[in-house]
Image (tube, rainbow, N blue to C red):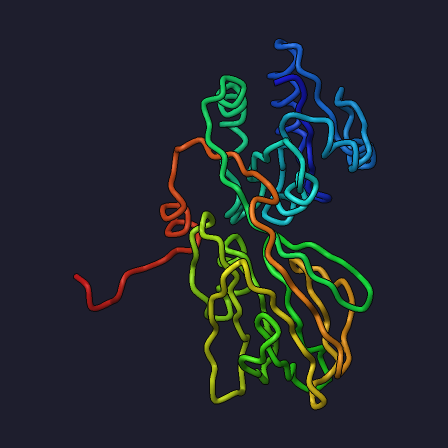
Length: 283
């Protein structure tokens, strides 16, 4: 490994974690880079790059923050050779692999090639002349004060089901533990190549979601009785739709790579971080 890129949480104090990376790299002749604007908040020796260069030039991206920072790092790594190591500075940090005290040990293991890669699927979405990419989910969401999301879900150009709901969520397996989970969707192991469609607070007689193959396209059609909807991409509003608009989505497997060190399994992380409990009927 010759270079490491840092992706920082916009508000949380990342100085300790940044110093840990710099101290580890300094004795090994490894260059440390970061986004120029983010580094301006810190007095450190990391070298500034633009976000585009950061994704292209480094051998490893280190995400310092929570799940939102990890998703941003994955977008920078999209289509690039660098995998992403998640370091948790937040509360949940479901996507993170290590905490700050374990960072030097983790970097040493990665430098020695003692790690595995977990490929992550992305969703590309097209609407209103725009193209956006999500690693968690794309959702059409009712705008407060407007009527419900009344949406037809077309699969491979065939109408399948229509929902009247607060939102309709199309999630990756990575995003199965995020918005889709809170709306009642299943937990899906990240290595599974599939898309999840989940309605949030549906008012329809059919109130369940479903799972699709990544070979199928999905189109969300805003029906005439639908209200104005926000298009949320990984939790950020990227635009709005009106009745008659369409959002077309396609899965893209292996868009980014996440570092796993083999310390815990997905199921152990899910059980601990989502605080899953067994049935009260089980002694």
